[in-house]
Length: 83
Image (cartoon, rainbow, N blue to C red; front, side):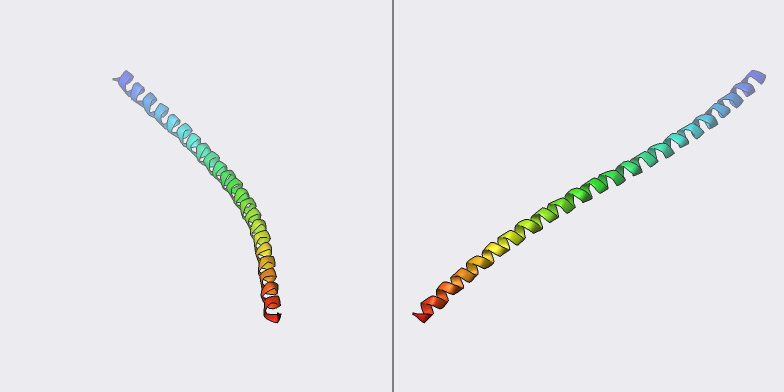
């Protein structure tokens, strides 16, 4: 009987000890995942900002060329009207 009670007590202590270690590991894993997610989000944000800046620069160039062509067309129409 004493052996059974001692064995049960030992098992209970072992389980409680394992639970504490498991909880610590879970906390560590949760912190690691949170940190990794923040880093990934920062990386994606930087890439998106770079892509947006590149797109803005390209659009400005296209708009400027388009405006020049419109002005050239307007000059041609204006000259044709004068003739």
